[in-house]
Length: 403
Ligand code: SF4
Image: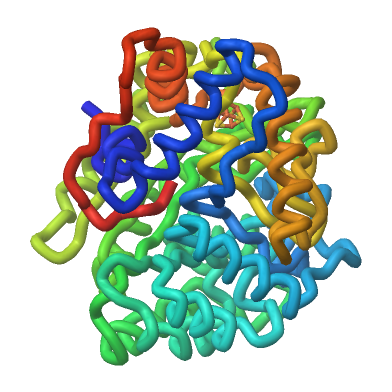
């Protein structure tokens, strides 16, 4: 069964989102029918991942963005605001502040979140939690559909320090968690999550061995509940392959996989017993795929990845087609100001057309366990549907626009 947060088809069928998808599908149908000289529709992605900064104050040994951290690239606030405003006019509904660095280190972070909320966008923050003061500052601006997720991956101060290597000795797992009750007092509405990426011996980031944390799954869940997080989520570690794609490839540790998965299952099941009415314990789709050995089903992508038009990644290095390929040249859609005005958005539309035609997802993403696999095939079928007037079947508005 698909979790509601991963039911991307239902999200794209919402009445407020479907018109952009409809415009995209009609355009693609006409192109495949051989019409020439068509301009791409003036639509913005429904959802973006926005990397506000490449700066980070940790040195995590499992970081998948290692190569772009602490580089000199910067966003220019004026262009960034203009880009977001233009995208919001054209159908952008949600922004996930994430990746490539620690978003709370961006100067003016709180003001910028306020700007997004003034545009009535849904906002999510994926953070290392070290700047609890800044998270507390934005909390009053958020509502029940917004969320903050802290990447903590451990249950003890010792393992936390070994895994994340904060550059300041003052940052501990305790000091981070102590901010959560204060945030809940300030505004209980946004969901605050404790993210735990499961790491085991044999999983590697290039040559670096990683710290195993399976034994801290249960202590982490206890801690998350005690400190009033709304949930804890468990997810297996991802790796980057040579061409930059982010993948989960358990065949690398084939001999150990079954035993590791069994241990993980036992610990996650124990953690689940800690769930209450106000505290949930989630396991990721990736974890179930690993366990049921179905991850390969998610690697069979259509040639054209349609999600490139509906969700993009804006970073200080430029605009990319997918989080799994952030920072990779062949996945690049434009500069960091790619939506800063109508002219630049047109150029970006042309670049998108090029990638839709030339970025062969069936090859480039053949190792990626892509959660967008089903929605991509669904859009592909709509485009190939030759019935007269075939259109997107509009569904219910669930007010969840994160893709
Ligand atoms: S097929 Fe999946 S992994 Fe590949 S670009 Fe599209 S969404 Fe990203």
